[in-house]
Image (cartoon, rainbow, N blue to C red):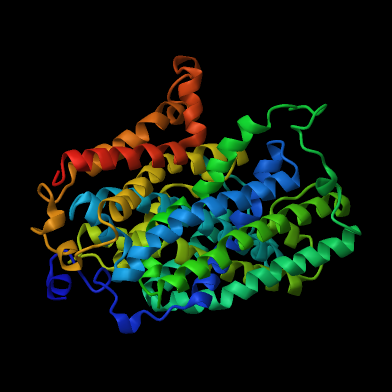
Length: 485
């Protein structure tokens, strides 16, 4: 593929993966998803839903259903990576143009930067707990000015952040090893925590017995469905990022069956299991300690043995590191490299991701459970849903899964459209975002709620679904009217 290798739109990280390097089987993809799904944000997901009024069955069921839904675009978008060995930003070129692909790539990359910071903050919190055991005098209580966190918390965050940067500098090959170690490690840690909670509490405690607040006679009776659909959208949004950039991984698959079966086996069951572990352990803490403790890091600090605590926290750090690099570095590194392939490679793109992750102050993104779901998760799904609709409409409905790989790397080829930009795709993207925009502006308090009709604001609760469907239809209509636009 001379154009793909010699083009100014290519580099060693963006070039198609040759057949001999496509070695990932079903277990590799299952392990990938077990590794990424078994993480602290998953553990915490159900807590937000239960605080909103759901019982544990409704919360875990909502998470499982959301991951069945997001599995569909995950497998569909993965097809192009496996078939042609191409990464996500290159895949975007077919619909958006060789230069226009930077728009979806950067939108996806900025979301990943936020997630990178969140995971680094969680890992830094574990480091902070270890420091509190080994050197209590170094753990400061004073606030850190405008940052809203203590100096020692910020320092531990930077230590864990630096460890992430070191792995990025080691290169992409280190990620596979991390994932293979982490997949059984965090699952084992979660199951051990579950067994400990069962033993200490003599069962799983009051949260599993707690009725839904939406049940008849309860405080929020009759309000289940208005809460359910925005919550489902938020849960879909949790992995809406990876449903787009999954070609970054599926380009290494041996076959379509390997990527599809591996993802189906690894994603929905692990998300539901780890969410249940979070609910059950938290429920048990209400019996053991007299209050519900949702944060697993805080639960682990209650262990009396320093050796057990430090070992558990180190395992947590390693697991968080593996998730962060795989889920939140691989894609944005490629996306930023796509901006200037001759100047930015995987390492450079990864460093940009890490720096932006700090600048986004992740501790504020996760400070409020309601804001975490209904502002952060639902908010970015309003951007990513339309991108997914456009990519699937283009690849399946418009092109019948047929791509010219050389043309994807040709600045004057079939996918160059007008100066490298597809106006059709950009208009479809804006069209898909617009229905949810007023509700998003209300959610982030840039518009007063009274200024937006209630039915318009309500569309925000369905942001991923509305954006996906509207953009899908808009793209196909516009593409038929303007085939080269």
